Image 1: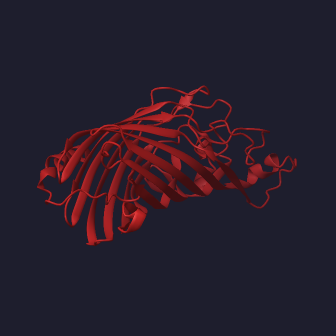
Image 2: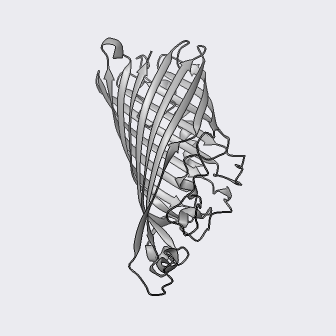
Image 3: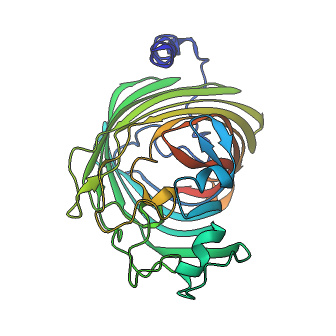
Length: 343
């Protein structure tokens, strides 16, 4: 409730911006900042690298030995790389459409409980063996996002837009052949799949205030996941609050500080073919929770030639607060970099 109240206050204070025209100084990790004029185009390529490591139960770190009380394996680290291509077009003076396609690569390192190694390797030996380390890797096209953005309010210094997004399940959510399983052709755990298999909806509001030197924005977006995929599950619904402020250092550069808070409900349903005792990410109960992340970013504006409406942006983020449902690997850091071209 405190987060929601803070967002409402930010929206109501927005008219105190200065007299400068609006300039897109949004950080690299912000996909929706404002609507575009009729006929206007914007193209963006972004790359995100996420590094995870260390296991949490709730908001406390736990050891592998504690995980082995319930699971045969424990994740030790995970990396995710995502390539994002986005296009926006102003259909009218008030309505903009955005389409975003993604390609994702996942890698998770695992360590196995010593007493389970003989069974996993089919050696037939009950003698304890050295701890075994393994890696899972998946990659492919992820889900596609389509957003409609409608301008509710627009001034020289500020704008308020409403958005509605649809998740189109173009990614693969049935990738099999998990090398960390003793069962042939077993599916990879949920977080290693590149898609969700479900249609989701993302309503939201974004307020942006742009001035001579200072820019700031507050954004509230929900993700509603009412439909299960044909395997029998869907991820939990989500509420996302994003607030950032930026300062223009020079005509060609600005910095930003961003704070995001995310709360995600637990997963509904499960993949009945996944043995829940393999490792935590194969257990549907270990999904969802609350996170707060902070980001420091910088933008560079290219103001000459045919690239005069272009921007290069980079952000680095670290966790401020993590509280997970069940057992999950914690976030260590996120890097987002992108190039935007407006026509």
